[in-house]
Amino acid sequence: MNKFLYIGAQYKASGNGFIIYISKDGDNTGATDMEFGAWSRAIKFDRNVQYFVASWEHQDPQLWQVVNESTKSQLQEGIQKKFVSQGVGYEVKIPLSVLGLESGNKIYFVGCIVGGDGSSSPDTVPNNVYPENWDWNVPISITNMAEFVIP
Image (cartoon, rainbow, N blue to C red; front, side, top):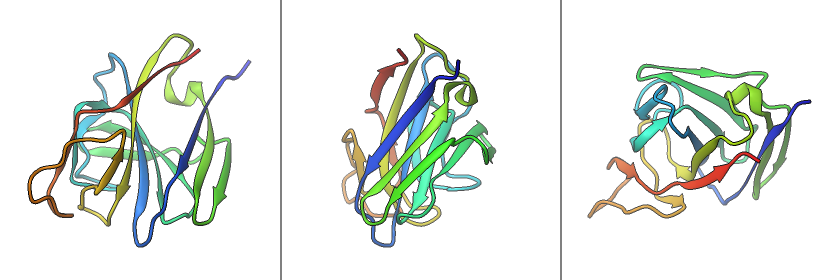
């Protein structure tokens, strides 16, 4: 029987995108610095990130795997169902098996409003500390992520 991870994001974006980064507890694959490849952003983490769901404005969300420090791969078939509400956000349904997850695994996640390629994030959920004199070109370090245990 397939089990799924459902992700919903409600946000406002004007000339921006929204990314939800996912980190699997205890997994050292992926990368801590997102400033490379597809959806390159000046965002760094204190833990490795393996996946993210990204949407520009309120367009079709995409699922990506952060393979390592230099490779990100789009998982075309990874999202089973999508719902996009123009001007409001999106919902996606992803099989746990696509993310290498099973019952009892813990994940960490954070949502980020993002600017264009190479920029950082002006707002995160949960909140993170911003450097003094932050601007779009100033990297942000994500240290605060929400936790979820797969039931």
